[in-house]
Length: 256
Ligand SMILES: Cc1cc2nc3c(=O)[nH]c(=O)nc-3n(C[C@H](O)[C@H](O)[C@H](O)COP(=O)(O)OP(=O)(O)OC[C@H]3O[C@@H](n4cnc5c(N)ncnc54)[C@H](O)[C@@H]3O)c2cc1C
Image (cartoon, rainbow, N blue to C red; front, side):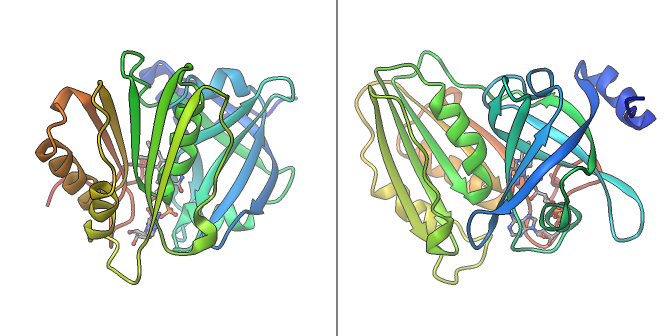
């Protein structure tokens, strides 16, 4: 008999117009000092939506309470009915502990697709900025840009091997700027902003997508506005927040 999702996942999915399913873990493999690639199987097309979307995974926190964590879909293999997530694992939290310790065959309660940020099909160039939590989403979104197109990544890393790359179709011009954090605080935007200052905006229409730490992406948005990018050409989503667990529904707290 197929395992059914938790009642709360079924209710949540109905409220969000999404789907709740129980998938299986295929593998969890360290790709670098701070990133695990988690491969899940089951209803991939149904759960993963379009580039930019994420899935909510239900986990148990150290107090035994059920919580959800959101992870962007990095890639989908419809033939194998599998999808991959790139999960940061160098901190301690229910999500990182799960990604490090998950075993093949484990059942995973998933709600998806989630998320509203998609690729701006009218833009001539696409700028993805953030820390390494943005890589899965940024690469899937960028790979969906039609040629001829231009994609730019400005990403802050703690370790050289976290600067993971991927491949793109011919006809896509790719620029990657990886900035070493060099011990700066994780809510200090200085590294990302110095990466931005190294990038000359092309003359045609661009769109910036900001994913990462709460304070850092707010500062990056202000810097992009200062550089003349229109507010409607900037989309941002805080993925996590320094010093605080994400809330049980998976989002970082928004207040000061
Ligand atoms: C829409 C959405 C999509 C996301 N996509 C991804 C994704 O593709 N890959 C990914 O890795 N994360 C992604 N995140 C972020 C991820 O859900 C959070 O980082 C989440 O907080 C991790 O949960 P946790 O249980 O490990 O840590 P939490 O319980 O939330 O936090 C525990 C502690 O670790 C710190 N912390 C949390 N995340 C990080 C981090 N990345 N680096 C350093 N310290 C951290 C917190 O400040 C806190 O002190 C996404 C978040 C959202 C909202």
